[in-house]
Image (cartoon, rainbow, N blue to C red; front, top):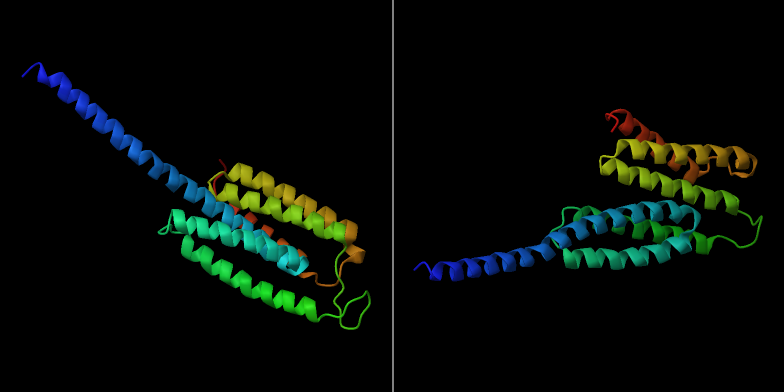
Length: 198
């Protein structure tokens, strides 16, 4: 009986190792799904911004996120963020369809009657960088890294103010993407103000 004991312990160790090895992919998939969901959420926020300024680019980006959403659904069909991401994706599809239809109906050529004036290309590119910084700030805030979030948000606000000052005379009155970005930055600043610094 004593001689059989080591053999039994060896079997138990092999079973434990096999069970651990079987669980590792499940844990990795769960962590990977969380990261993927966060990436999709950030990308959809960026697309929401681009619909007004670059609808064609937004359409391409939305196609890419459709594939990412399918991947998330395949890897983690019960992921808690999935319903909200699908809803946001559907809303963006509707907004994009309306934006592309409006762009297709708008007369071509500068100064055409009824055509809304657009912001300079350099301003639009700069605002996309501001939006990226804001998304990084949001991601850090969601991870609980308030100090890093505040740093990214300060960069975003500084760059936005500089862009607005530089292109103020060339911007159409009530430029919607600028107003939306200001609101988003202000809202995240308020959320950060309510959190203890880390």
